[in-house]
Every structure is written in C-alpha cells, then in structure tokens.
Image 1 (cartoon, rainbow, N blue to C red):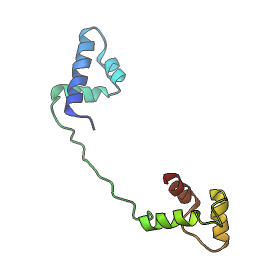
Image 2: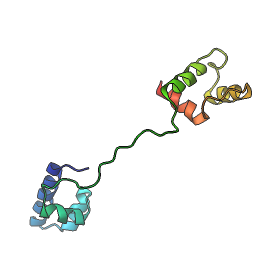
Image 3: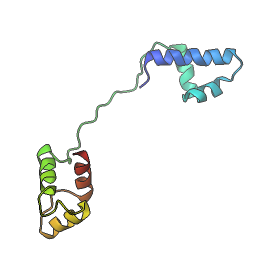
Image 4: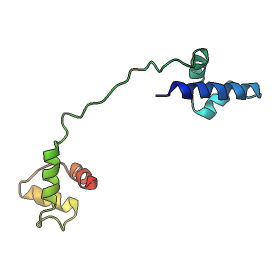
Amino acid sequence: MISARDRQKAVELITEAVQAGARAVEACKCLGIAFSSYLKWRENPQSEDRRAKREFGSNPRSLSSEEHQAVYERSCQPDVCDLSVRQAFYALLDKGEYLASESTVYRILRHY
C-alpha cells in the first residue's frame, strides 16, 4: 500500500520530469509505477488506497506452540542430538515416532 504522501511526491516528481522534457511513461517506469496509476493519482493525489486491506489468519493445519516445543525437545534428546536433522528424523521414524515432517523439523530448529 502506498501512502497518500508518497503518491503526491510521485506525482510531483513525474510532473517535474515531464516539464523538463521527459516522457511521462518513462518517468513512471523509473519510479516503478504504472502510467495508469500516475494518471489516477494526478487527478486526486490525496485519495486513500481503495484496495481492500486483508489480514491473513494462521493456517489451521499449522502446529501449535506445544507441538513446536515437543519437536524441539525431542530433537535435543541424547539419542538423536548428535545426528543430522535428516538422520534424526528417519531414526525416530524407524522407532515409530512422527512429530512433524522433515521440512517442518528443519524450520522449527532453524527458528531456535
């Protein structure tokens, strides 16, 4: 989302460049905005962004903090702590213990 102040500044910069002889389309490319956006902003630079603001919730399939902690603590146990993550994952899998996928174990251990 681009603030109204930044839009106004972009319009001023592009207008300045056009008055100096540059093409508006090229000036927009330099700022990384679409020419159509510039045209809209030029008409009303103070307007707010009308795109819907969306907040993403947590994934319902994600592990809880207790499950994260269980994976971390199990990975620190003496029987697997000296193994690589891959070796530890498959050693636990051979014992019938499955706490999370291998990539999730990597992600959890990277976090700590």
